Length: 346
Image (cartoon, rainbow, N blue to C red; front, top):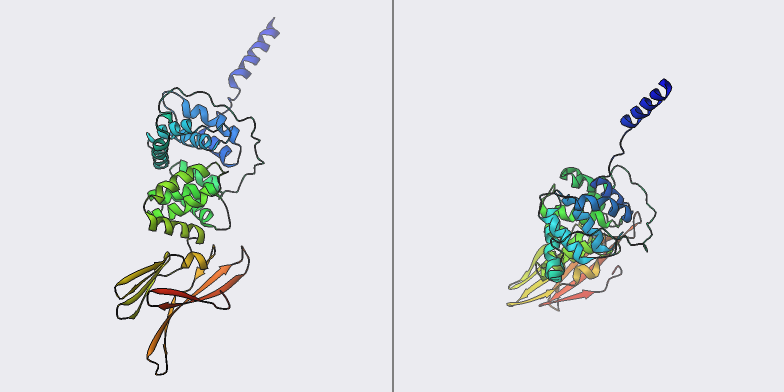
């Protein structure tokens, strides 16, 4: 009888002192999502996003992205819109992105945007196979996004900026979150143009869970106007380290050409003509520009006629870490027209 009592006491002590398994956190859901385990991310994020009375707005944001893209669950734009809307009502590091996406989607969905109704359990997409996943190093995108989620913007920028800017590394998550940092000036100076360019890059991979959300925010950025949109698309293609230097050349009385990244504008005898195809047509992704050079040549029998030439030299990479090729382009300015001259390197 005494032996049985001791066995009971020992078993009870073991039960009392056994460690309780830690509950998955929102950060665990973010890690699962970024490594491509979308169904696990849905399972982890849903309770945090729907708990009462204090749902986690960060969990709502990432769960909304999964519903928007149909990753780990069946795509549900109304539910995604509702989650973005809920996430926009709280103060957290991704509140701006949630607000912008929710506003854009509400215009399209109207009453289909699930604002406040009861949140039903997530329906996993049984047809989706989880991809093979691999953990990155301490400076990978996941570490940067976790730093952002914690509000550590300097650390997030240190990690995400070089990944997002790398033209040879297609990382929509790094591009998406770095764009948001540029848009709001968290950890970096406010730069809506870079934000737009990175949203555009991230949206080009629509199979990635952040592709649809990036497309929404790109569309919102592009609404700033045609010239902004044109500059945004050029920057997205060329990269941020293009080195192009704007220049203005006075060719004669009432004859001026202004050359910018988005093209050249010629003023001649009170008329203005713009050519917006120059940079985009003659530069490849990752290109680096040398300063433009203007040359005036005196021609004609008495050397009294002036001809005006602009030289554009561009280093173009063959790949990473491939060789660089120097391209030379020459243009002649004739009144209010820009005429390209064929060169051996063009």
